[in-house]
Length: 402
Image (tube, rainbow, N blue to C red; front, top):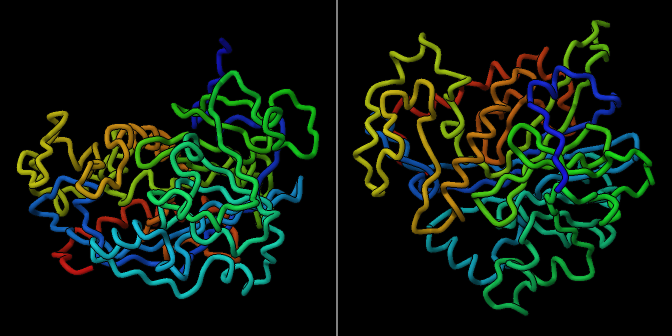
């Protein structure tokens, strides 16, 4: 049994990597939005002083460009424009939830309008296979491969209509290379799956390591982009971690940067930032406590899920307002694992040089530069500080409409 290399998130930002490689990352607002999402289907408990019952959520994606290999990835695709053509089971569930789906344009169109040829996309990484992330792969050429998490093929293939119960479509995946991740610490992923197309001889390339408390794959082998195993919300859920700024590089003013900076693409590891913050490492500032800490009693829970850990007094101070819930809609595969994944993410979120962004994070809009602009140097721009407590705006009044 091979002992994995272990690196903390703080070590990751403070320790120069043998390679100074970065990836160019752009945040894509896919234009998709879901209105009328019941919070009780995803997180809880309901808190009387925080009557946040509905969500109208954006859907975010990321463009990742690796100049050293001239490879381009997409992390998630949002919702397909013709969402009514999803598998009948998914369409029925959307309508049963009474959600309103808005898709002005798909990701392929967003890219094309800004001069990015979809033929240049080498790989689409799907954080998981829910309809608001898989988009429409058929809008990309067959040369664009798909990278998916563990269990995808067993649980989702074949698609509909070959498998009438599948939530994905045969037509979207036919004649397309699909590579399924395996986070076995004994496996050299690039060797076994031929991901390392350029033949890099570095022995560490493609090896699975332990990053924080996540099993992680150094995708390009140079420390510029990692895939993290983040189970709980869905089969094979993945997160991405991209180094957008390297230590020793110069900023626009000619000043040497002292630390690496990373963007962590959290997918659906959480659906509201109040599931991530506050945390033991990122406590709610005293200046905000009088306004936002009123009633944090977790015993009065209409979902039947009580205070799991008896931490009502700390909830909202050093622990998040919300935790993932297993609801009637089965939107979380395993709520306990989902909560454990969030706890792991809190360790990354506590590092100033790591910007954590989930797929439905409204708080980054209007602060973080969007595609076609890039995310390098976010620390000097102050983005993390600006968005850290922005989610508290949701708790200022009654939000009863989606």
